[in-house]
Length: 78
Image (cartoon, rainbow, N blue to C red; front, side):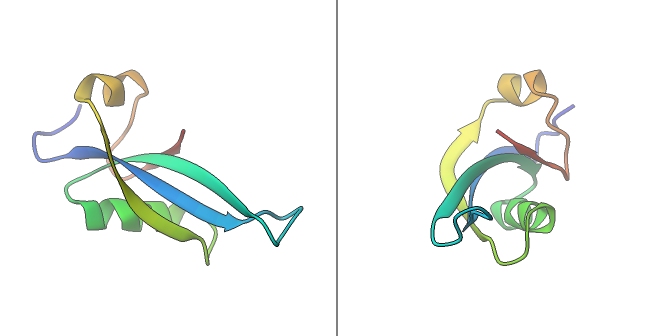
């Protein structure tokens, strides 16, 4: 259940591709958090050290977050 003070943020992660280190692999994660900074930290904790983690301007609706079973405190790769 999404609490009223939580928002489902979309976070972009860029990291070197293991097979081609000169190229960046781009991934997107959904995260449910009280504020954007906490959302970014949750994703940073879930991905490889050294990855570039940035907040996007996109948010998920409550219906979409519930449909993908997004849980507070956990990052979900999209």
